[in-house]
Amino acid sequence: MFLTLPEIWIVLLNALGIPAAHFGISWAFTRAPGGWFDPARWPFRPFPGESARRYERRTFIRHWKERLPDAAPWFGGFAKKRLHGADPDFLHRFIAESCRSEAAHWAQVLVIAGFIAWTPWPWALVIPAYAIASNLPCILLQRYNRLRFRRVLARSQGSHHRKAPCHSAC
Image 1 (spheres, one colour):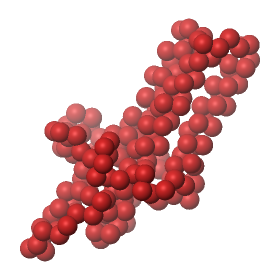
Image 2 (spheres, rainbow, N blue to C red):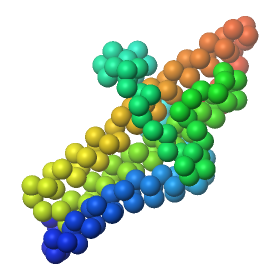
Image 3 (cartoon, rainbow, N blue to C red):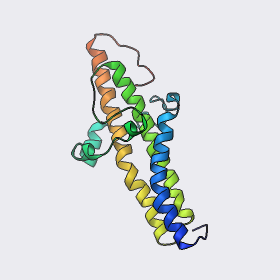
Image 4 (cartoon, rainbow, N blue to C red):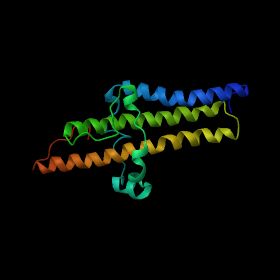
């Protein structure tokens, strides 16, 4: 705890501030320029050894991914809950929007973890644990989907017997 506040303020800041951080960051990221979320750049491009199959084997993501909400449509953003086609332009957009979503969830982790500034010990340990636990499944899902849709795009480009250039959204 870096700031000493009355207990009622700590409770109010955490009880109101944490949901406000989730929703406020989500709202802000739906309005951020798309160029900030280039799938070809770090941290959105695949890490060495990262694969959709590894996510499936290690996290059992196929069993729980449907239970996660997609809050982007609540703020006028791009819906990612269901795949609406296999058109390459749609898949490129989906991939780019998954970067936006991943970045929003990382921002939520950082902002909410900052609530330890006024949260007393040992409750201060709960704040970053909650920040990670509430956002990590969403981050994993965005990375998993991006890997899967990159593979679909690569197959569709290969099926045309030509090597089409990959847009920045690959």
